[in-house]
Length: 506
Image (cartoon, rainbow, N blue to C red; front, side, top):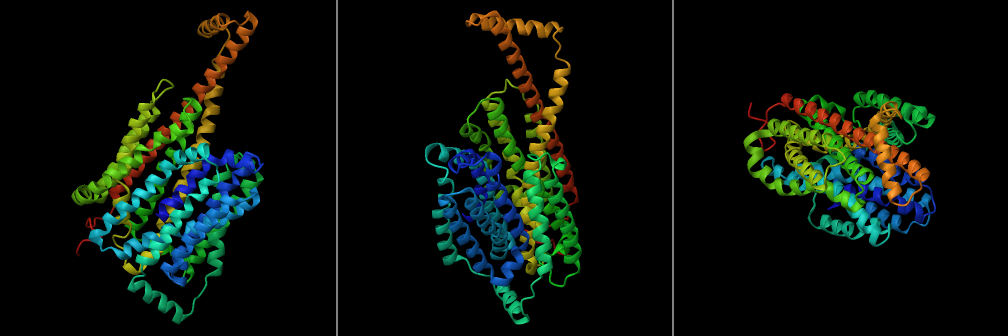
């Protein structure tokens, strides 16, 4: 429930942004910090979660995160000004950043390898469903109630999650022993590592979220934040590899399956969230669908995952194994993205639904084998540290995916528009015939000859802009399809392990 609530909040506020800006008397550019502030705080806390769990106890830290997220959600709904709303969103991001790593570690410690797939199947439903229904739910809430209810709906879910966590969640014996040793040895705080990691991922998130809006390296603001991020990142890597008790244990990436799992988590976020952002933009900007309708167009993926998850756990994963399923997953997603890249302005709504269903089948085969792959050769005492890294890579994949699709779409639209303008000549018979046809239609509607000509030229320019935009969207889908194919190839390097998540007997 907490996972669903936290991931939902990363997408649901996007739709409500214009309403929030209007309600708080601020501009759209200023209001985007509502999204950025949350993502930055989330990115900072994610890699630190394993250390914080060990320092305070996993259950205690997890429940603190749920409580902070719930309280800050309520305060976001009450916020009287943009400044306070951004501050409360930072608190919300801090609470939300600790949820997924704790949850994944709890699942791995609680369930034996043979039952781990079923646990991750249920968990994957929340991860895939939340971003898919976020825009639809956000649009419905803002249309029928108020943008403040986008935040208020977290409160009952958070309270129920707190109650159930208190009743049924316990720290494992291994985790209790680790906490006891930490207290006996004294808590050694890696302050330098914490500062460097926080600076690296916090500044990187600002760059990814604001880059396209500020024209990337043409902005001194973006260049400064990227420079800080890179210096802190390389400094943090150097420091953490040398530190005896690092806040982020990068040595885990030496294990091949764990490193590949993080790559797949990254690509999962990149492709799923990137396409989930792109499709509604395409439907609203070019096909005239409402936010509610365009939201439903991305929902079939979640429906397929929910339907397929039990089948994947019980029959498909044990029979075919991780490597085949992960490869098939990315290839199916590539097929869906290639279908998207072949659409045109005459495509109907059913086409988008059908293609998203294909993509959903691909996603259904991915999360369960990747989750088992991540822990297939790791010792149990490293599960807590591993969960922070896997969720960090998934989070970064989502951020890079959104940044990539928005930037590439904007740049390719400029390229196509320039090309079309160069080939749109007044002396071209086809252009002349089209203008004459438009003018005749306008004159039949009551326009004068002069006004009909002006409106015909404007209509032709609008058609050209739409063509440039659809071609840009198709280019992005085409590139993402090839990214999925490259990800499928990486499945060939997976080290074999049993479907229960344990390595084969030596």
